[in-house]
Image (cartoon, rainbow, N blue to C red; front, side, top):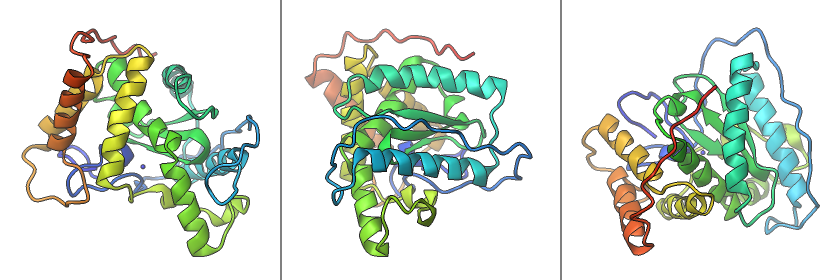
Amino acid sequence: MHQFALCLAILGFLLQGGQESSLRLLKRPPDTARSARKQKLVGRAIPTATRGFTDRDQIRLGAALAAQYDRERGIGPTVQSKQIETYLQAVADKLAARAKRKLPYRIHYDPYPAFKSAFALPGGHIIFGGGILALMKTEDELAAVIAHEIIHIDERQVDERVERIAKERNISPTNLSLWKVEDFGPGYTKQQELACDSGGASLAVKAGYSPFGLLHLLQTFQLLAGPQTGGSPNRATLAERISQIQDEIRTNGWEGLTKEKPLELP
């Protein structure tokens, strides 16, 4: 798939300054109701840029990793969590319809309140945390996060990670038991994260959402984080991300797209 005052382990979307980028699994007591979601694999076997692996390979790998995540975190669906996941999926579907890669983008909702982020897995799978959802006021903010993660996949950044790991360990995406969900944690560069903010904002606008959703959410993160000092040249700061979306709102003529839709959680 970041740190600020209220979060002990921030994941994918919140990459900032010296903060971590995607997944660092949060430890909690296992839930007795453990279940791995059944994932229907759809789509044609279209060769990707990843050593000849097909999109179907990527989809299957992502589904296995999402199921692994559920098992390790002890996540079992409840009536409420399934309703929330359905709502998140509806937003993702609007965005995915405008994505370049026609993958079956699939949201996996983790209601754990300390999980204040989201991160992308191969083949269009996205893990979305209940903690970050609690920070949102509008559906446009929600769309900004999902769009950011879609771009990680759409621009084949996740595919590149699959390729790197496969080469380093001499494994194939078809050897599902050899892959770990932690493999898709920290590692995106500053340029990649800024590109996902930019591409995600454009995708959200195409889907009818306001680019101010991303701006307002980043400003919320900044408020909660407090002053940022130091940082790494390889990590985008909140200030840099806010400045970028402000510039893009001006240069793309999005100033009038201020209307945001209230979040409508079940």
